[in-house]
Length: 465
Image (cartoon, rainbow, N blue to C red; front, side):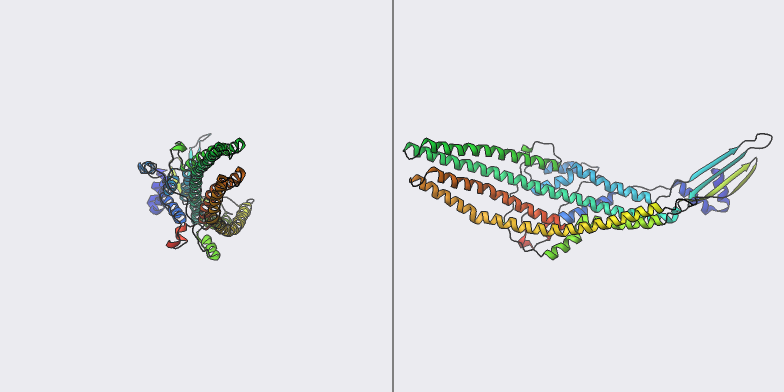
């Protein structure tokens, strides 16, 4: 090899330099900027920053997680914990690094080939040596196309992984408010037990005065026992909701150690422009942007495959020696496209492009309908929750008070009180279930449009989410 380069250097130093560049060329793989772009996309879609970075060699991430776990856990802290500590999300983020590595690989020439042949004399004569180093020249005009394809694939990966992170944020918010709703319902069930016990005391007092029977007392006591069972179920639901939240946060600690501080959001009236919301979704949904980039990537791939009817055109330098005689000259090897003209790969690339285009069209329809559905869900949930707060609950409280007063005066029996009591206890429980549905409907609007609510409404209209 040294002989070849020395001979080349005497006449064509630029060619020797090119051979050395091919032999020693290298590229570094540093996807940190792509991770930063992914984090920026997530922040734009969710309003939350602090995405896990595989390049944080300090203890900054661990320290921040410890800080977030110190004290009660707000919704904002929960989302940040998910972005920093969710192992499944961290695994998905590595795909950005893999895609960046593919981009680096697309810009590299394949390694040169070194061929050698030694011929030994059978009778009298001299031994002969042949050697050549060749490089596939076809790659010189394939590399730009390959790099464009790899860039499109990387952009699609960034969008797709950012969308997965945004979905993780949506799941965390939903899990948080489900746990808060379970906490509120647990408090309601304790209030309901107090209500049933108060009525049991009233019936027992009426029995002492001869106005109630043992049957009445047993009926009131049965309500207390049933409510105790309901309370136990509510305790389990609260524990299980916090356990599911802990999974999203990547925490092994006991769910009982999670102290959730934020309440369910209050009622609010928002006015939606459906057409404007659909346009925003088409501009901002990360999965839609990923699908668009995938269409572009498959289009680039089709164009590249059409160029690959010639796959190998190798050229380089050959050396031959026989005794003390040396000769050097160009070497070439060409693969003839006689049978395989890449027609099958071209057809596959065209089919993938068609698939990607159809997928984009189907996803666009889904996004439009998701926006419509999310807004209708919000309006319905808000109307129902308001009806419970302003009409159903006050009516239930008043009905129970009137039934108890009528029972005290001996005008009605215990059954009328039990009916009114059951309706009120159920209404209290259902009110917080409706508030949970309202909170989830707001989160679904964010997910459907691909923007946080803070960017969708005026400051005066914001929900404290």
